[in-house]
Length: 295
Image 1 (tube, rainbow, N blue to C red):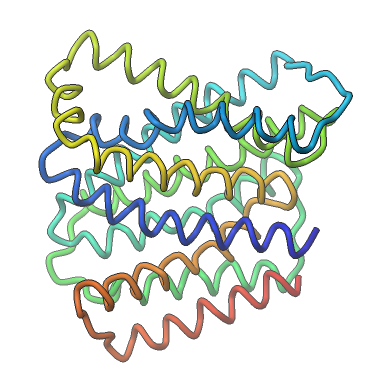
Image 2 (image 1 turned 90 degrees about the vertical axis):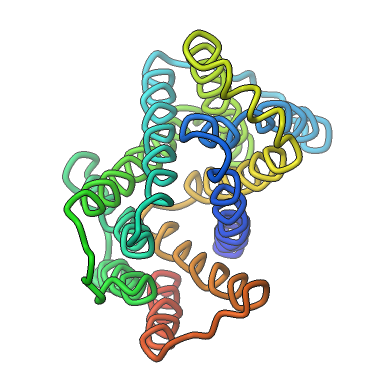
């Protein structure tokens, strides 16, 4: 079980780093809601194919039953993730983008607080220390200590995005727990398909009525749109499966290793060099990851 959730979390973090890079590219020619839809539009057929393959190669005899609570969790989680994504895309347009993204990564800390206050989750002292340390590390890596040009708007957008992502993660886990009649990996796949289905229906309906030119813009960038969807699907598959196995703050703290992948992508493709504070941040991310795994 330990190896499994670590593997799925690392996969999610790696694919999310690529998805963010592709989303930023797409945001130069497509509006916020179009970039948000790009995250889900090809994810729906991929989720259907994945679920079918899962039942072929890992067949089970149990029937699945969806409770009312399950659909409430799914709908709220789907909407929260749409809002979180839209806010993240909005950060791409801010001059102090890096600081905003660092604030958006407060998701792990916010998820821990929400889980403890509202869902009676319990974290050990080591786990809490790891979560807080991870937050500090991401803040350093995003150069959040450089407050020149910092604006309240970036603060609101960044923390708002982190809060919406935290709500999504918590409710995804709660929805998965509602499917207790199924093995963990099957539960996660049903939750993934359900969330993506709601998101695609909602976004296609909205854009079809009010912004058809956005759909045309996505069609014109079909290759990049598919890359965003594929990376997003793989990332969500990793997150949803890992969060079906263990508590959200633990998964999201280890998942902050995503920023290491992002820096490696920047260094390899854009030849950007790390500053001293970023080396400190990398070390803290690794230490936070060790603490939450140990916890």
